[in-house]
Length: 288
Image (cartoon, rainbow, N blue to C red):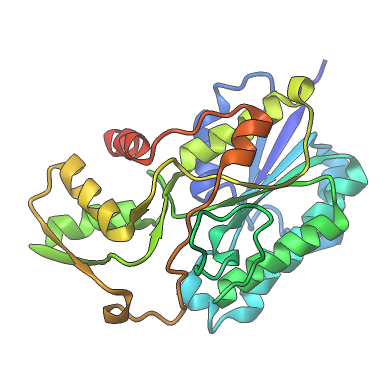
């Protein structure tokens, strides 16, 4: 009997590469990883033809336009990848009976909440990237109400460009670094997020498929400065790390000052255990 297929878009991104890393531990499934060269996800005819041939049981959309600052001037592409393409994938999944998991972001919120963001907290993005991702969520649920959307935050891993790898590089090159201390949230190790999605798929037969929006990030609450200090300590760097306010580090895109996600719903619904942020950071640094 043929194994169920899991199609992963954005196969060369951080989450896509993390899913590749874990795929060998899930031998009950056949994994297919594609990137934009292999499948243009913003074109319904092409996606529909692809689904017709491959017939995936599951699709994880890990493809995204994630250049937050560049999105301010590159709106069209950001909305194409983060908005329209999500609608295309959601429609194709609906048409072919494919279970769909889409990854979204903490940036759909404005950062003014006094407490961790729940899934039903009103959204109000403060930059183009956040608006484009919110558009993707709306199209996803419009075309495919049976989808699972997972909002995540501060993603890093051994692959691609991210805060952890940037800090390690700069700490080697410089005697001191200034890091923003007034933006609060929790990081997400992409391997943990990948594991969570594969657990959701694996448990579907027992726990059932429960559609809707979920939040996932590692456990804890820190600032970017705290994150940098932990990277320094765990890597044994002698670089000095100084806290600075956001006002001293202007960027084209505004960032939410508070983006901590409440992860209770995904833990309760799917019985997931989410690691503490520092434990996951240590695992990532050991692999690096």
